[in-house]
Length: 113
Image (tube, rainbow, N blue to C red; front, side, top):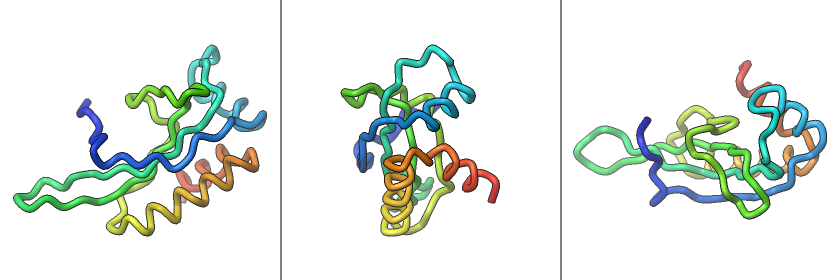
């Protein structure tokens, strides 16, 4: 697996995982996960060409209260987006869903569509 591009990694939020989202997280991964927070970030994905050019994706990582997370195990990664403004807007909507304990259902809908 390719190491992530932390030079273009923009953390948007570290928010506590609500009860409903905690249940969904445990059902989808390691039931003994010490994760207590969601880390939502916008990440640059460098395109393979001679001129440096990026697309952007939004990633959600289970994290602890200090923001430590495993970059190899994201809970969700969006499709690549051409504009960082679109990625930032989508990340903001996920932050709102997470604060309302509906992040797992928001990402489930995104995965289906």
